[in-house]
Structure formats: structure tokens, C-alpha cells
Image (cartoon, rainbow, N blue to C red; front, side):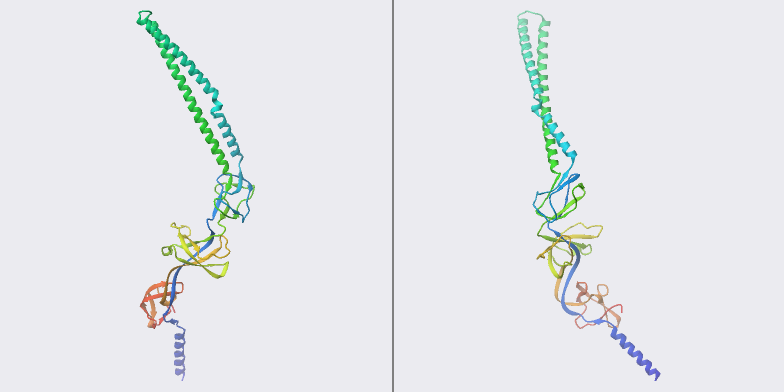
Length: 360
């Protein structure tokens, strides 16, 4: 009697254990393979505004949510050194102007006139002395002295002309250089007015009046007021699957019960070595009615779709090519598309086969 009871308990334990073993059959249904990506919403043409100069903010001409046009002034920066440099450039330009050096040029022109007259006179005297010498009148020494005086006068005239031309070139160069320096100084003074580079909206002002700005620190964030895109981070293991034009299924905490569609429009070719991810941009097929920069999103990028595929749960797959059949026997299979829960079986199983969950 006791032996029968023990046997009955043993049989019931085996049956109970058998019931707990998880098994399944492949089913025919649709499957979609996708790549997960996290990201944020960004305004079209969104950029950080920087000052090109160092100085102190004297005036902020806009407020957050203001819409601006290209070239609109945003912030005025003050730097006393720049003002003094411009004044110095103005003074230098006035000093180097040709009109301001007219007397120097007039003086050298007068010297040229005097040298010209002396050369003409000495040349005439030499010619007369030469004629007398040809008639046998006068001495050789007198002739040579008159010739030397004529040559010296000619050299003096040439020197006077050279001095005049050199001064004229120098003054022209100095005047042009001073005008350019003044123009550069005036142009750089325009850098102290920070302007918008696009038509858009002021999303953030990062500085206040009285604060110091420099070219390394942003002062504002501007972007398009009506158009937004998605900036997605894609793992390096998945990037080779991503192509332009792929459909993206998007969810956002701001629209908890809604799903939106987008398409991949840009893939950055350089990987971020810190995060081991690639950046990609996607545009909404139909943009949500209200969006703000930096809203977080979760996205599934659709790689492939297949209808009426033979599917098994992914946790029934051993490795990438085996399943467990009756008697703890492994059976090789060829897999196709995969998602986070299911995997397509291309070869190795039929819809009538029973497979068991491994690791039980």
C-alpha cells in the first residue's frame, strides 16, 4: 500500500513538472525589424549665438519668445578700448591724408623747379663754353668745369624728382593704410552689436546686462519658430542599418498616448567617441501642433517589414541558430527579421512543430 502511494506521488510530480515546462508552436503573423534611438526635438536651424568680441553687455534688445529677422540687433556689447582704437585710427587717417601733407609735396615740387632751372642754366653755359672751345677760345679746364656743373645740376634735378615721387608714394601708402585701419576699426565696432543670423525665435537668453561676454561662451539660443526636427543618437552597432528615407516611429512624454511618424533625412558620418553613438536627423511626416526645443523623444527606426512570416518568441532562440525540441534536442534554424520580442524563422521549423523554452 505504501509503495503504491509513493509511486502515485512520484507520477503526479512528474506530470506537474511537465505542465510547468513552457512550450510553443511557431505562428504566422507580421513582423517589423527596427532600431531603437533616443533623442531630442530641435528647432529648424537652431543655433547658439556667440559674441565675436570680448566686452560687457550694455543692453539686451530682445526678450525670450521674441521673433526676429536676419540682421536684427540682439545684444549691445561695450568695450572702451575699441572706442579709443577707433579714435586713434581716425586721427591717424586724418594725419596721413594727402591734403594734410600738401605743404611737404609743394616744397619738393618747388625744389624740382629750382633744380630744373639750374640744370637748364648750367647746360646752356656748358654749351656756350663748348662752342668757344671749338673756336679755340678758352681753356680745357674751363670747359670741363662747365660740363661738371651741368652734370651735377642734372643729377640734382633727378634726385629732386626721386624725392618727390618717393614722398608721394609714401604719403599715398600711409593715407590708404590709415583709411583701411580706420575702416577695419569701424567694422570691428559693428561686432559689438550681436545680430541674428536667421529668421526665427529667441528660445533662450543666457546672459544678462552687465555680464562679461567672450567668443567662447554662448549668449542666446535662436531657432525657427515653426519647423522642428529630431536629433537622434544611434548606437554604433546599429548604424550600418540606417539609411536616409527610413520611417521612424516616434513617441514623446509630452504626447503620451500618441505616436508620430518621421523620416531619416541626415546621418552624421563621425562617431561620438564618448558615447559611441552616431547622430542622425529626422523630420516629422506630420508635425505635432505644439513643440519646444529639447523635448525628449524615443524612436524606433523601421529597417524592414514582412507579412505572413513564421514567428517564434525571441527568448526561445538559443544563440542565433538553435531551438530546443522534444527530448532536450537542439535543432538548427535559419532566422530572418527580429524585433525585441519575436524572431522570424526562415528555415528549420514548420507551424506544427513544438519547441521548448531553454533554461528550464
